Length: 252
Image (cartoon, rainbow, N blue to C red; front, top):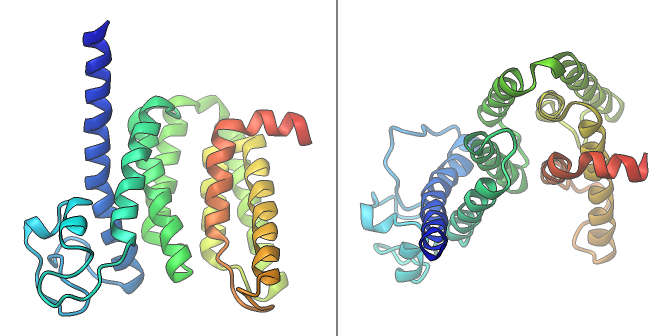
């Protein structure tokens, strides 16, 4: 039993380390995709002095700690985003292994892409196609493999969710919503079907409204200022993945 417990702990440690490495790559996606920069050709470099970074500058978490959050070459500050995303991705890998949706590989890919999307919208107010297409693709493949009998329900949910966001864009004349939200609606329906899509949207709009009110009351935001909606959609998606039936039974 002790041997099994030790092996399990070692596996979790390995998963965390692997997750931090993937988190380092997610940081590349988060900053390069919105800027339209190549993902695999250019080597990593300091954002300030443009000096090319060597391998020991890129060790997840540890490099940031040992460099004291400063560039080795120009001493410019290194954003806290990098170690935070690496740590969060490490814990995502542990969580995804212990509580998989469909399968562990699908869960790890799904949550990693959602984390990157969360940050791009939070930081740049964008839901980029280069992240939306993989999310839509892996969700469609998972649906075809694991729940082919639910395909029609999920397609209908996807179309209705996309139309819902398209309607909001038309009504608001593009203020506060974009076509990235329409793409997210397609992904949401394919991933969650019914009632999961409804639950995810309910949670997203509820939490978005509550946070908006808090920010307005605290004078952190003013009326008319944009608050990214993607993070609330992603929060609703993750909660709905695990608790949609329970929430649906309580509220609807």
